[in-house]
Structure formats: C-alpha cells, structure tokens
Amino acid sequence: MSETQTAPAPASAGPLTDKARALLHEWVQSDSLRKHCEAVSASMRQMARVNGEDEDRWAAVGLLHDLDYERHPNLELSETGHPFVGVASLRATGWDEEICRAILSHADYSGVEPVSAMEKTLRAVDELSGFAIAVALVRPDKSIHAVEVRSVRKKLKDKGFAAKVNRSDITAGAEMLGMPLDDLIGEVILALRAEAPRLGLAGAASDQTVM
Ligand SMILES: [Fe+2]
Image (cartoon, rainbow, N blue to C red; front, side):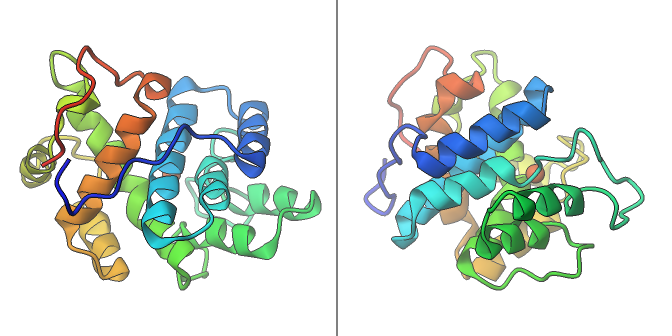
C-alpha cells in the first residue's frame, strides 16, 4: 500500500449493514446481484472511512441501492420500477430520507441529482466496483489482491473489455467527487480486497500492494 492510500476498512458489519444485508437476501436471490451490492457496499464503507463519515450507514446504502432490481429491473425507466419500488418499501419500513434519497439519486433517470457526499460516492463507485471485479476475474488467479490501479486504467482504455460498462460514468464519478481517478480506483481496490473472500476474489495472494 502506498503512503497516500487509506487503510482498508474492517470486515463489513454494523447494525444498519446487518439489517440491510438481511433485506438484500430477502429481495435478491441472484448471487451476482448480491455480490454487486456487496462490492458497492464495501466501496461505500471504504470511502466513508476516507472521508470520516459513518461507515455503517454508507455501507448499508451500498447494500440497498439495487434492492428491487431483480424483481423490478425497470428497463423502461418508469416510476413503477427500480429504484422507486425499493425506496417506497424502505420509506414505509422506517429507513430515513438521507438513505432513501441517496438510493434514488444513483439512477440518472430518477430526477434526483446526487448532491451529498454519500450520493456522489454511490454514483461514482457503482460502475467502478463492478469494473474492478471484472479486471480481477479475467486474471488466471481471479484475485483482487493482484489487481493494480494501472491494470484497471489499462482495461478502461480497452473498449472491447467489459464493453457494457460506461467509461464516462466512471470518469464523471471521480470528477463529481473532485478526486483523481487513480485515487478513487485505489480506494475501490482496497475495499474489494477487504471483502475478497465474500466476493470470491481472494485468489491465492493476500498482501500485495495497490499501486
Ligand atoms: Fe448498482
């Protein structure tokens, strides 16, 4: 780890995180969607740590942001699908407005723009965490521990790799946060390393450097 990197967040747990994970498992059966939410949650937790924010709260938002995506994928981008259905259910069960608003704001068609640090971070790490995982999974060892910032950068330039991932969402996310893209990638890699066993990305390595 370089001196500019923050230490990885501890294992993902906490009262809100645990409650959010139980809800995620109730709503989502797909292993890949659960893992996506876990990856975004780990990244949110790490970024909360970097910014001195509430790690449990930010991690919970990551777990909940695609809660309704499996049941209501909302390909038509209507107000009767994701993320509106999930947010309505969260509101009805007492989840507060800061969390609900953040979840709405990660969908660029919701009409809710990301304003707070939590909201901007969710928008920034949603695609990036999936992309970093894709970089790990094409390695023979499938290990996030061997993924470096420069390897993610290189794959971002390779338009044929993970072609569905919108590169401009990733660069715009870093810009919105006012953070160099390399730093954001570094934090996301650290976040994913901290949760590597849960994400199936542990490979054989355990303590290599990020940069
Ligand atoms: Fe997502």
